[in-house]
Length: 171
Image (cartoon, rainbow, N blue to C red):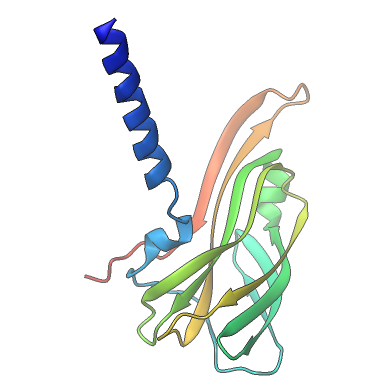
């Protein structure tokens, strides 16, 4: 009986730890890192500004504007042709926006879009209003996705993982 009580307490404590550590937004895990080789977009805009980001992996077109401390951003994102042709499913896809200082150091971030179990040929729409953190002078997009291929019966085959994230601590 005592063993059952201590096991229950241990399980509850572990569950609490997992829940509390899991509450931090994913994009904030990169705070303080330098986003090397990022295509950046100035926050010094008051008119709506259109921009594109195209890599081998994704194509995105968006517009954004600042109004006081707020940033409005909306657009579309699609997978690159290779991923559309080679894979049957997107297991998970996340599109992030990172607020950067003049040295490309991440001040804060937010998830703009997330999908699970989607088709690679789909186009995804996003729209957000975010607060610009103090010290941010520019923004950059980042992404992470995992893909799986499947045969005609839907059996999962090989897969791939792609990302463009600010992983460098700058040291």
